[in-house]
Structures are given as C-alpha cells and as structure tokens.
Amino acid sequence: MMLPLATFTVAFGLAFGVAAIHAGITHWEAILMSMFVFAAPSQFAALELWTTPLPLLALAMTTMAIHTRHLLMSASLYPWLKPLPLLQQFGVIFMLTDSNWAMALGEYQRGERNIGILLGGGIALWTAWVIGTGIGLAFGGGIHQPERFGLDVIMLCFLLVIVIGGNPKLVMILPWLAAALSALLAYWWLPPYLHVLVGALTGGMVAILLPKRWYKAGIL
Image (cartoon, rainbow, N blue to C red):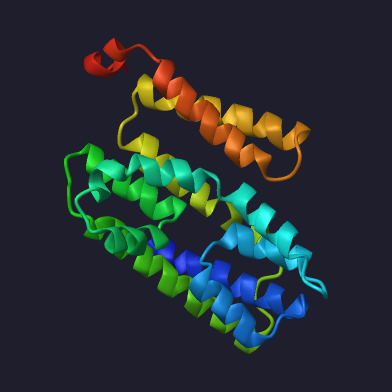
C-alpha cells in the first residue's frame, strides 16, 4: 500500500533538494536534515528561515507548532506501542508520518496487531524522502512548483481514503469534518501553523463528545 505513496514521496524529496539549493544550504546539510528530521513541512519552513546567523529559537518554535499534532498521533498509538521496550517505542515513533500513521491506525481498528505495518511504512517513506532529496541536490532542476502536478494534495487524498474510506460512518466523518473546518478558519485568522494544532484538537474533542452509543451502534 505504501509503494505508490513512496513514489510520490521521492518527488517531494526532489522538490526539497532543489529548494535547499536555492536557499543556500549545502548538500550535506540538506541530506542530514532529511535523514534526521524527516519532516517535510518543517524542513520546507526551515528553508524560509534559513539566514546567517540561524534563528534557532524561531526554527524550534516553528517546528514545534507544525508538528504538535504528532503528540496526538503518537498518543493514539499508545495501546499498540505499550508492550515494546522504551527504546523500540522511540525508534518506531521516529518513523511516524501522517501517511503511515493513518494506514497503521486503520489496520489496528480492523484488529491487526503487527507493529511492522507502522515501522515498515515509515522506513519506506524515509528511504524515498532521502533518495528524492539526493536526486534534487544532484540535478538541481526538478520540480519548482509541485502543485502544478497535483503533488500537494496527494497526501491529503491518501489520508482521506485510508482513514474515512475504510470506515465511512458518521462517527468517523464528523470529527474529521470538524477538524478540517476549524483548521481552515484558523489558517485564515490565526498566526502561521497554528491551524494544525487547532484542527487536531477540535477533531479530537468532537470525537470525545460524540455519544458513546453511536460508536456501539456503528451509526452510518
């Protein structure tokens, strides 16, 4: 399931490699960033802030704002990760992305308990991301406007299919709809990147407040 998405991830990585060149980042800095940060949104945001001297506090705060949702994502996987030793938990979470989280969560809800689904998907995406970055750095041309090819909505479409498509019930759709609407409003009216946190918290609150009998009845 992750192979098609990994192919598109190469293209995203290529775009990052090209953008890194234009931002004045050296090849080894860009490669190390893709290897150890492994987070496309914060890496692209870092390019916008990349000056001399580096604004370390701004970089840290921006990255934290963008990826606050990972606190909620990893918390949702706690029942799955709990039996693992602590170091293994950290190793698996390092590979956590929106895509393999959605895929793994869907499998968990269907009764699958093999953590390799989460880890294997993350490794596939990490490999594709690093390879794509290397290609972008090596050839320097690549994709300047990925939205022209629809690459900017690939991840969104994948998440919708995995999370909602596999369980198209009202109790699943309402939290995601609330998250989308609140994130959109926050994007328009709040400071940059806060819409991510607002959407995640709103969706979570709606899911908590829905009547428990809806979940038990499997309301469509």
